[in-house]
Image 1: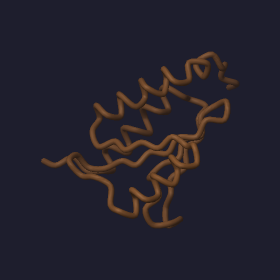
Image 2: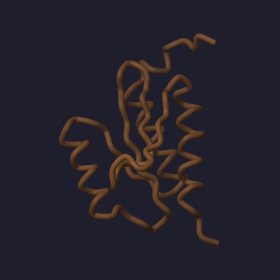
Image 3: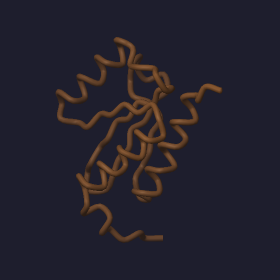
Image 4: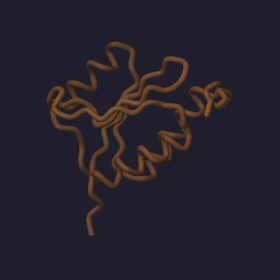
Length: 107
């Protein structure tokens, strides 16, 4: 059975929430063709765009152009198409922004 993109996207959101519980998450729907599926606003002003794809699927031309625009403007933009890639992304972000884990939750 083929894994659907929504399963990867749901796993991405769950793992990002575990790692960065105070992050804000936005889903792009009908904003502009090719935009990333999710925008994660992490504490301390970090913005991360993530496109989730089904396994063995890659970016369409419009998505690749949108991703290149983000990178050219200094934003972080990632593509994940497996749960393992999601895990690697979360681990990478935790290494890039270790100070975020020190922020207390104000519940």
